[in-house]
Length: 238
Image (tube, rainbow, N blue to C red; front, side, top):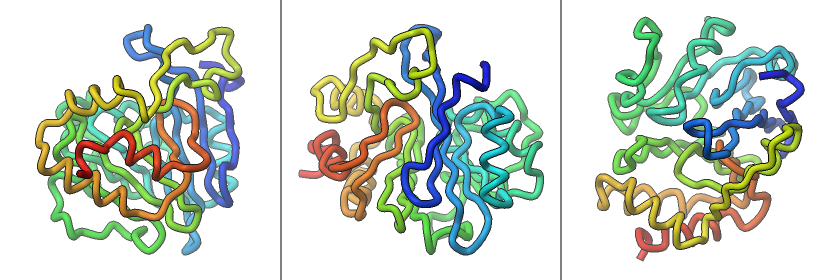
């Protein structure tokens, strides 16, 4: 992937996104996105979901020393090793379910949602909350960057078409899937493996204070993000 296909921008103070084309199974144009946050306490937190291109690395290095590399769920693991090799002193934190899917079995994690106690803190909780969705098939983790009121997540909510992620591509994204659509709600229902756990965790996130949603797949929702979350997870909130 040429670095010219990566769109880098600051969506809120100290919150940077790295967006690029990505087609699931080579067909479904979902787009891909990593997110880097310059922490107030010093250091950088990175949700690593796209390749570490040179321009991506240049911007991350401008923000400071990478302290945390985050894997968002059981399937967003492909680039974790690439980031860890580039930033060997960073803590690598992912989900237990990713391990069986990874080709790099030697990659060592400093923390794993699904294995660690739910009460465990990883060091960034004064700025970024997290909620592990054990009842979701992909075992996703939702994150709240409290200073910018931004929800960051991978597969829990999509906002397609992925216009920004394809804005430097010769292809035009054709997949349309909005958070408040019946089809997206059907997908969530079909990927739920524990309804009680989903009710618990969807409600936890709904009660967070956020306006923006930064998804891995699709355009950033700049406002009314909490409203969109509640529309998608309505069946689990009532």
